[in-house]
Length: 376
Image (tube, rainbow, N blue to C red):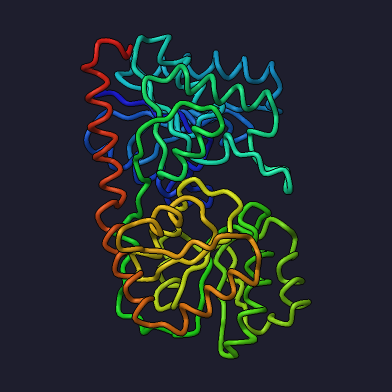
């Protein structure tokens, strides 16, 4: 089977910094089974070609995302794919421009297409001006990709509801799982007052909420500490906020941590905390779970899904109030049996739905589409 992935980037070679872990694992896994090619839409500002796990990668620059740029990309991606060989299936990861380019390519070659809504393509968080749903043009682009796709996937049931509420087509839930080769409990001793947070420092992940909640929780738990792993996109804003809130000595900013070293930061923490405004399927939650660390946080993505399990694997707080999040963190820090039960359920789920499970699900989906006469 010849599979083409159309992605927004994240396909540096394994030792590069611009890596989307689940994309890497999917390309590596599928390239071991099938003939795979990748078209990166906007990974670099200039055209380029390289290989990733033996699969050819072609970069198509986007420019300023003007209408002319979009039209150029929609013409350039099928041309690039044509040079790589006629595809049997085309998969767009992210449903905006990569998704629309994938469906254009599928039409060009009469191949079925899968489009995965992987992020904020339809989100509309006006308080931070985040999400493709805030602007009519970007929203319509995504909805057009979803209508044209042979199949639509999302990573969580929470995301399925989000897409439906935004007027999008509801598709299959295929979790984007953790790579268990890098995530396991190991032999770390649990630090009963230590929290961890894995995410880039930005407005969407809302580390302001995290730090305010930590400041409140520290009043009840004086030994509380926090480690944050993620690159800073806000020029030191959160370091200054930690200082202002009086928690700077409690917080360790690890900066960007290579993916194969993240488990070292996560293992042994009592809790992983997620504070995102929007998160389609935060793999950090599943990676923490695979390391034996449960998550407490905002009701998005896997936090909402795991919290809703018959045997809950996470705690989803009902509001973005720092006091509510702080109370939930303190309650869990003081309740080891409940924390252990959450960790056990989350770890079991993450191991059953790991990155290999993701690849297997997509493999089955591709084969089904290829044999379905109405999907070309």
